[in-house]
Image 1 (cartoon, rainbow, N blue to C red):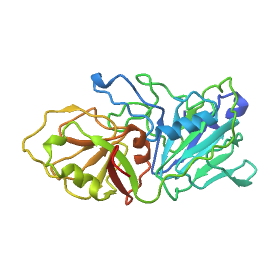
Image 2 (tube, rainbow, N blue to C red; image 1 turned 180 degrees about the vertical axis):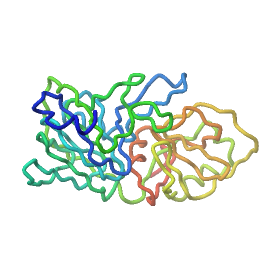
Image 3 (tube, one colour; image 1 turned 90 degrees about the vertical axis):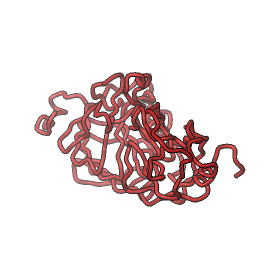
Image 4 (cartoon, rainbow, N blue to C red; image 1 turned 90 degrees about the horizontal axis):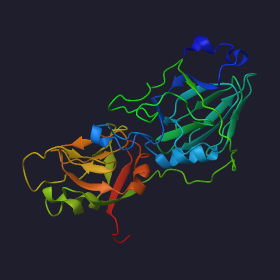
Length: 308
């Protein structure tokens, strides 16, 4: 649906929607991803910070898998078609609502907000964290691909990235009503991020001190990071053997080490197989935290169960 079709939408009975006026650096539609398709070469994809997406949907009484907008480093501007209830979770960012009569007000974080028909919502850059989630009561109702509405940037599956003029339909409101209008959740960490790991399936491809080296000093998140993986810069991880590894299955949180010795932490859109050895895997409960790390931030790895 294009922008011209939005004119007079409420009067003509058009179902509720979000019209994208500006997508920011990177905005995608995400739910909890495609499961049970890895054997077909199809990755899970889905929200990089699954906990933030689940929280947004709980606040609106949506099913936890309802599709939302994942917004990287702010910059999104949308207009409501019909009266909407929305919420923002993940990386807190300055948010402004402009009403149809020109009045403006702020929008809270992790709280339920009304977006009247014709009102616009603008997101600024979050001071900490990387990814903000905009959910709407009823969910973003774009067509499913293999059981998910997620955009996979690596494979190209799912809906196209929203662009100026994109209109995203909103599904019917669920029968249940929200039971809370605010969730006091901690903000993403701004300092050194500590992530629990377990030894990977190929840690024996590295020298005996490599796993200790991984955990000894922080690694910097480089600008060459995206939803596929977080490229890190820090102590070089030395191999104990030469040769190439046949491609094998990969999971979110895998720390794959190419010949450079600089690890890459796989995130939501990671490939389902890879040929570089995996020295360690970030525990599932810390993958969401990793997804909020910004370029320039430092992460430190800690073997799960080690003394704190």
